[in-house]
Image 1: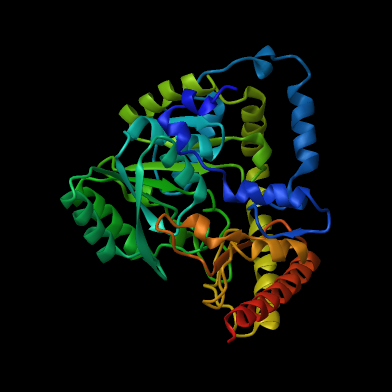
Image 2 (image 1 turned 30 degrees about the vertical axis):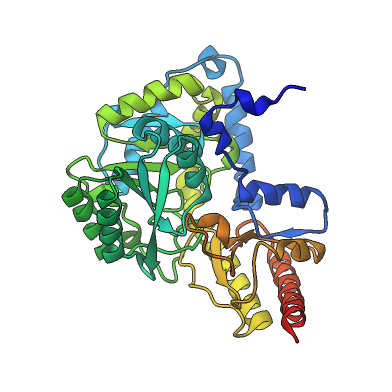
Length: 414
């Protein structure tokens, strides 16, 4: 019998299953489960007719390059379209700064492989995105968390943490942040704090990795364009590596995203991508480009804001009705997620089996913390389910919590 562990790299030995993907396995076991787990865009918002027309045009066979290998950097017209998108976001860029990636997750993987050595420290928000945790862990980097305020990362705690880690003799390479409607909390980093974060990174010689997939999904009842201005837009010293994506605004199945980085880093990301997949799919890139060129993306954005804002309202109203004061959450001003705190005696991870039995699933908060916290917190995604399923799922979740509280009380009773 071969012991295959003897043939694994040390990095492979540290790899862990995604908590969000694990919930997909639970979902597959029953058709009756309402899922608040994955942050999937709402399929009913996809511009199906436009996609059909574009792919029909592209597959007429008049341009053989549509189905060929392409440049690692990406399809040139799409890169030019992204320059326009970045310009609209206040961040002037150029072709030598840009790289198309196969989803934002590949962008995180490239950042990790190019910029981190085993043992290097990445500062992250508490909590932070699980995909980033995976990417950094896979190269054997170490993550140290920094607590957040209502308007994002606590700057005093950030500096204290940096100095403490450096005093321990460890090298801090970067700070990773999701400034707009963070996954998982939905928090928005304040305007002044964004400026101060950039000043801090310059002063302390730390790179900022800004992950911005939700920027366009701001809710118009509480957020403006100025509130979601990227940190990268005010970066004059080449301190920010910026990632964004078309997954949340067009469709995730295209797997088209991008990195904007200082040219020396962008060149290294390109070399690393060549070793990963040579290039992002040519057909996918052309479909996304045509969506930009034909104005489809611009027409989609207000539709998406209205759609997800309505779903946010349905979920918060249902939670208030079903839970009363037994649950609290920061009100999301955009994005896909609601970050819910349950009574302290509830263990979100331990409650998953009971929740699945009651026909609802979520992601336990512990998966998003690098310090083991978050046991009584859960992440609820309102983006994919219908209004009816949101209401039904929240009712099922409330019944689950009541059962769990009763079981917990029984267990500690004398």
